[in-house]
Length: 108
Image (cartoon, rainbow, N blue to C red; front, side):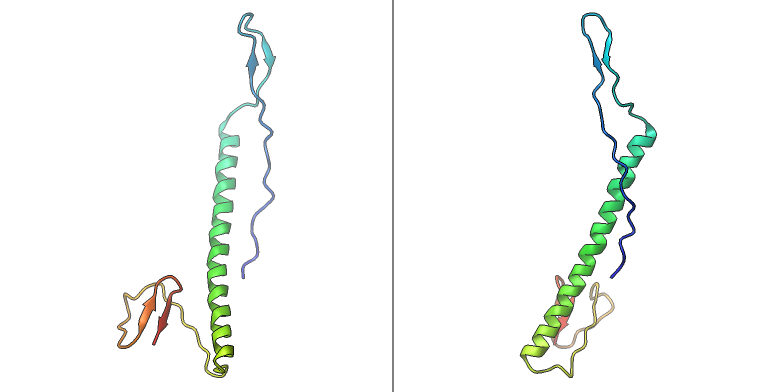
């Protein structure tokens, strides 16, 4: 399993820019919107999304491993356990059995 590579996110506390509609006087100076702040948001969202995708892939692998071990233990086949993962069947010619695309497993 990979270690989390994220750094703490530097949060911006956004403040509305308020102007008196009659006098035009600035009541409250708002938080400036600029390239640095918007890119900080974009990079933060991108980094978290990448980490979540990685964790989902790791969870799918662990789910498969756990199910394989449970099946082997319940069927008393603990000496013949092996797992091979496939992303697809493009390079395979299955003679007997089926491919489960969700679990990425071949059952023969």
